[in-house]
Length: 484
Image (tube, rainbow, N blue to C red):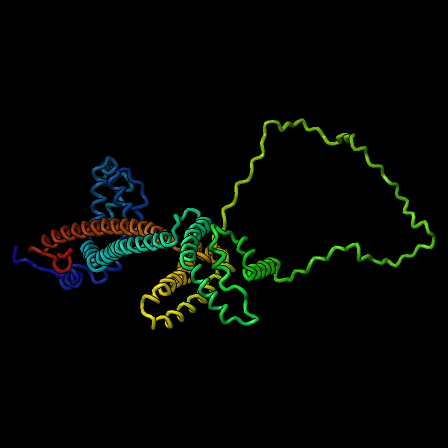
């Protein structure tokens, strides 16, 4: 053999045409061969290997036709011959005709060259690109899942912070919000009462003396009445309303407004007064005779005092012996700060007392720090009271305890935050399914690439062997096929 011949895979058809190894009208001739292939594929073949090769695809190239025919030859149906030496089985005869057609005028080389160019230039790169895209999607899903893990951790952290801020567990949000607000308001009310009792009496006495000194006829007799009333031990709101007329009037107005809201804003009409003996009604009826009107009513006789009336009830045969009626458990007292009128009045009195003490402290500075020390302490106590009453936490607790709409909005915020904790997990599950699908698609595509590579290399080796034998020189097909 002479020197090696290197042929570019993409130029293989032009190389064969240039050396007149294949006819110029080979596409038309290959179409006629494919018609023979379709006819041969319709015949029933017993051999499993040959049947598997036939079922691989419609476009059966030269090497595949040779493999099918060789597989049929190894089977009993391919070995049965006629008297003239031909194949007795129609399938074997037709596949022999296909192979002979491919060998005539070297159409098999044109078929192999077409398969190599198609696989190397189009099929394998497209499958590789598809597999790479699937693998990129798997990587993107993995990165997205990591981001969702961080989002889930942040959402759960925010939800826990909201629960900790509100001081609830989150099992029954609305009930827990109301109970927690009432408990904390009760503790806060105790702190307020303690501060009022520490400095409230002295402040009220001092302020009362100042008010008596400059009293006008229309001024109230007593200043800071609520702070004075809070000096009693565990005063209830009802007791405070009895002691403080202004608080009672504010509470009545608040209850009237609440009743108007419940009834749709309609004003309640006062109940009609019962007629008294002095105010008799003149029905406009005159009686001419002195005997009066006879209404034909018979007067029933009252039963004797010592005779018990007979029982006309139904005897159900049920005995209540041994049963005791349990007394209802006393309801917990409403915290002082949960009552709007009391809280509003106390805030006004504390602000009024603070203003008085601030003015007194300014005038008392000329007498030295010792003279102004009690005033400063009382002023600090009033400042603490103002801070407690106007603090953001106090306002939040008051709204939670008194406003159903605010509790509902807070519960909705918690529910939304809780839903945000579950959304990343749901999205991660969806991404996991996408990952599994894309990974399976990438694996299937890679397997198909390997199959195309194996077929392409087999066709390349077969074509190189036949070309080398024909040209009596080593023919090597190079180019993109070497990078597969």
